[in-house]
Image: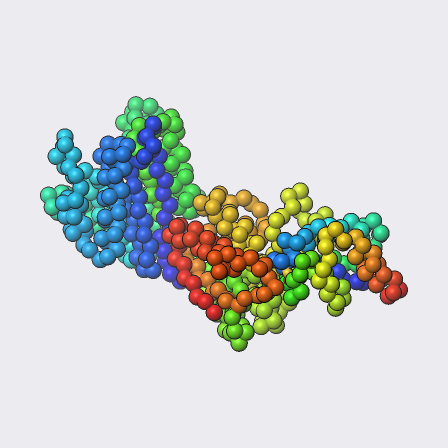
Length: 390
Length: 85
Ligand code: FES
């Protein structure tokens, strides 16, 4: 099994500002994760531009294999200087993780990363050195399964100044709070939400500074394989089914005809879990999509076009699995399965079913149009998506 | 026991599988036939048309419209049962 780092972040804007002066950039490549948090000097438009440029330049250069020294030199040469302090000013923290394990952390004037391992806040001794006239701190370390990490912008450290905490929330208190939350083994989204809500509360609902948190959780990758549509050539039916059945992780079939084909190939019975309205638990809310079916060895079997459209709609509204309704209909269950996975492989059959919904828009069956939307939504959440056509 | 299988594939579903099912359910209750007929669903029966496909035993009726579901029930389901008796 592969180990990965789950990442979630949230920014609170300084009260009255429309733009945030903090910027987070997360990029995932098959073996590398890069997380950059940048905090631009001040707030509003200028800070936003400084932070965005810094994070984007850093993430792009690192992704292309440039060294941190090169990144810092480029930033120094590119960004405008602050008139008052005569500095190029946007702080940043960069965390690069190879294979979900080998971490490299660089910090430039940001609050230190919080690392929680086995319910303890772990100190990460940093080495300081000068690059292009700037003191950066860096550190290489190994991640272990179950580790949590939290990156913060200044706004967190100062939350509640003069109120509950006279000197602000402070790194130590935040680390303790984070440690308490992760004891419940929540995921990165829940940790982010908890910290962000507390921060907002400490600011009495009106943050005095942009405040950003990036939470990370090291865990085993969750993979899913989705088959939709029978292959163009029926001779490939068995290949498609064996690809699905031999895949690692969660398996799903989206498409009634595909499900029937798979049942035939597997010699198993396909049972549609259809219940007369009066017996179904959600009889008050007539569902707009066909029921789920059961097929041995497959975790979720649904109809195709309507279910995909419903899942796409859910993904438009729900950012994470925690935002989904508790419903058990096919669309919600498909959306849940997709949001839960980190690496999703789609096997798309190219058969044209002349009987099925004949709606062909832009020369493409509706099912594939919804599928494209679903894939786009998942990519936006930094999931690793692969697509194969048969 | 007669099994009524209503198609809940993409095409039939948008043409009213649920409505047809509701009508059948209501009539089964009304006619007190719940120990003679069973209602269930299946995916595409390869007879997609302008209506909903319904299968009685081995025969597929590809064009049951939601509005005609009641007459279909009496003409096909009830008469089939009576013939069987
Ligand atoms: S969807 Fe009902 S017959 Fe095709």
